[in-house]
Image (cartoon, rainbow, N blue to C red; front, side):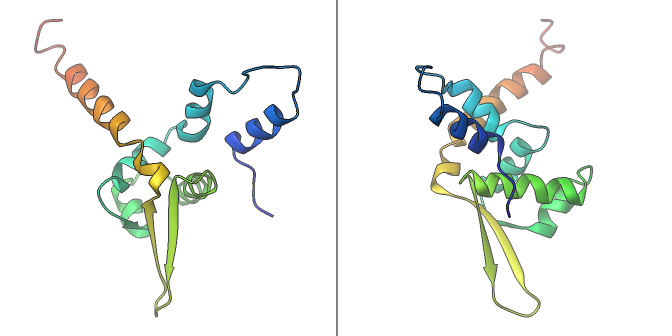
Length: 126
């Protein structure tokens, strides 16, 4: 039995709330799917190429193995990340962005630009 993600739970709730119109808030949806300490970082590493689990682990040494697995499973359950198992010895598993996951790219470009400007704030005297 797989664990229900925050977004799946929210959609189930919204589906059973006939008295509430427009309760599916887009900001809340974005936070449910992409929120948390690690998901955006994981997605940033998957933007340009598929990655193996071990690569992701090395790129993020501060994340625990349990948390990385949990975040990848939630992203997969929400249709953002695809897990591909290659039948070989030893088995190889790749993670990549789905078509829906690729749609987050413009958000990352804006976030990257904002982050760079923020890092430069003291140099510019602001």
